[in-house]
Length: 252
Image 1 (cartoon, rainbow, N blue to C red):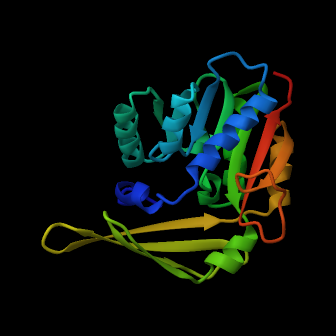
Image 2 (image 1 turned 45 degrees about the horizontal axis):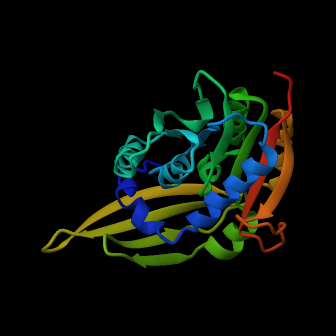
Image 3 (image 1 turned 45 degrees about the vertical axis):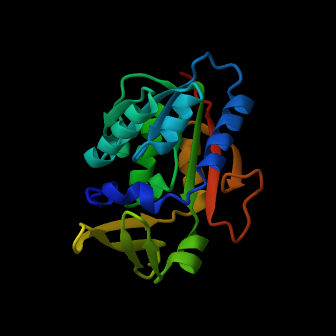
């Protein structure tokens, strides 16, 4: 997974993401479960990508740090931050080896960031890294694709996106026994006379929900709630994306 090419077109291809709902959900969760946090609330967005959500939260008054392993993504993030007139501390790090030198009130990971990790061991490294940067009462809010979505919605499918910036053909492999899907992105950008073609490859794994819960508990988190996307509804058998709200409960 490179995200080198994909970073250029990421915003166009995720323009339909319900970021209003994501922003409001996070704000409500912090108000409900973090009411004793001092202002400004410090928030760390791991796998922040182009930081569209981070910029929104910075505008809401959060003191935001954005962590991503892609220089190209952080470069676009810096442009968004500058255009919006807000400050976000950018950090180039892999989420499986976080070393940030402090603690934060809130951690978030959105748009299936943890699903891009290769296996449960890497997911445990990431969650453990978040825990090491929490103080008692810190919140961890994150989403993940479900095995149902990988098997029934994404597996073996091809999707086509035609935006003003790029034409994209997204081809998925069949989901394997671990609900891992390999994704091939063919990207075509019009240069004024013809189309330039770019190719990128990504992978996602939909981890077993109970295994994820076990990792959270071992890492010192209590699970406050699990939701069907960024709504107030509970998880069902056909939920495609779960959102967990967790609180760090271990002694400092």
